[in-house]
Image (cartoon, rainbow, N blue to C red; front, side, top):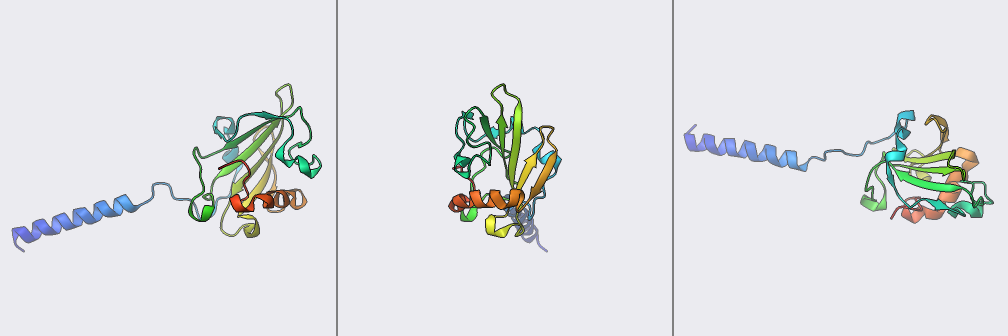
Amino acid sequence: MTIPTIRLFIVAVFCGAALTACSETTNPAPAEFIATDASFAGYAAWEKTTPERTGLDPASFLSGGAHDGTDTTVIRNMFVNKSGATRGTGGQFDNGVVFLKETKNADGTIKQILAMTKRGNDFNKDNGNWEWFMVGTDGIIIDRGANLMGGMCNACHSGAKTTDFVFTRS
């Protein structure tokens, strides 16, 4: 090989490596996200999706069953684990996104923690691949599943199907 050919080869290898590095995603969404207790740890430091609310919950039309919907003294906070989480391709959130709703009594003690995680891999595929959770005040998962609370989560959130089953995130 001649020196100009070697130089051309080195430049081609360098450019190819640079293009490959630039095209890779730094944190791709997992094919399936299976939440653990650690997935909810430190949620109070996550981004709030709405200002703290007191009064009727948007779920109040479910006869007060969900999120203490008709209890006007309950304080509600909504959190998301990924700051700035937005809908991507096809209007869907990435797998691994966690939305959490915390309800507190008027005195500030935590009353209930409910969450939804974008699980993916066709888990609960008719309901956007979301998994629903009841979480204890200690951050430990109490119950979970596609049909949590007899399917009440799916039934309510189906009203937000066009926004990937999420009510409060634009």
